[in-house]
Image (cartoon, rainbow, N blue to C red; front, side, top):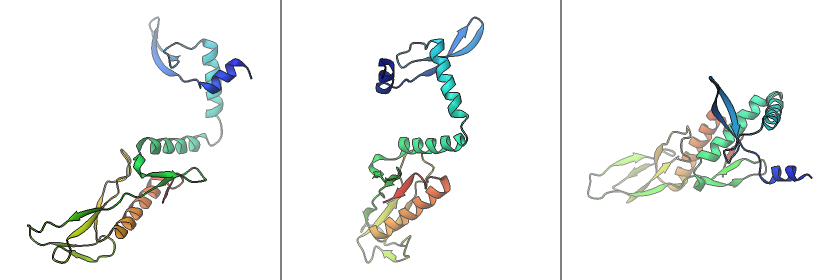
Length: 178
């Protein structure tokens, strides 16, 4: 292996497209991670390899899948990631339902569990649970809260919400729920 090939594997090339002025014309140039402009022959090699990539059949689907994975990597709460499976999908752990205390100094009130419809009343219990479905920043999953009678009901409600969102947004090939 040549020294250049070894260095390319050790330090992959990165570049930025920058706007430059050439005479009176606007143009683009490529700079490396240190701000140096690439030489013409290096840029032509990059363009040739990029052209090969973009001409492959199915490249649009590949790009769509890679961008979905990248979006998840950027925006999922790390606390909700339990690892990856053999197929490379991210395993999500569900957010825990939060236990809340009924305020005994206020009027009595009740609600029906979002899953099993059991009546939860401040007259009969001293607490209830709120299940949030927040698993990431800037993802399209609506941040919702469900009032539930137990952590178990909360887990089922969260799983249903997240599974529905995964299918609507096309993330079912990239995520699985623990």
